[in-house]
Length: 167
Image (tube, rainbow, N blue to C red; front, side, top):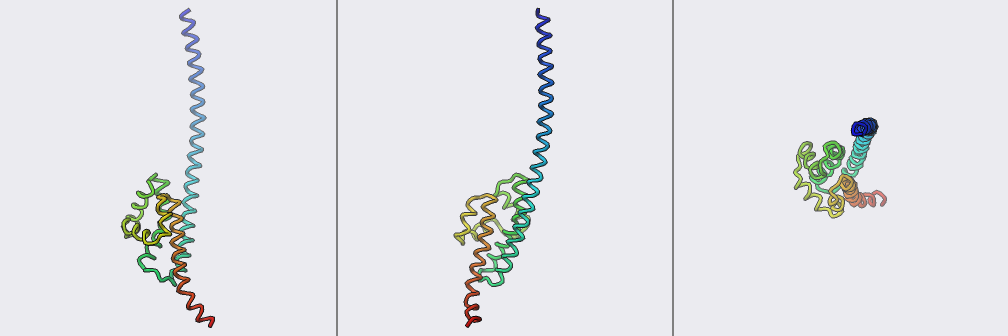
């Protein structure tokens, strides 16, 4: 009787082991597919970040010519927009927090200290909500506001000139 129980137990364990092995293979295939999708998603996100950065930089360049904002702030705005793709890579690829990624990006690609950058953001109330989110999405919103701020300062200078042309 004990031998029969051991044989049944052995058969059950073999069947269970085979079942677990096939489940393991299925999960490995599923993991590889998800990993490939993740890599593709990261690549697409990075490409979109590059395009968004270039779009904002072009708009900033056009508004910058007529802006009355201090040149050092305009430079920081430009650097912030240039860093969008780098931040995207740092956050998604290295899995860094937003603040650590920004600090690393500023150190690698610009001669701006994080404290100086934060002070520049604090001077303009409309930049603060995006900054306070401490996320990549908040950073993108802040960069959009940087462009709009520059554009608004440009329009203020253009209006008197437009009145002179019309008059």
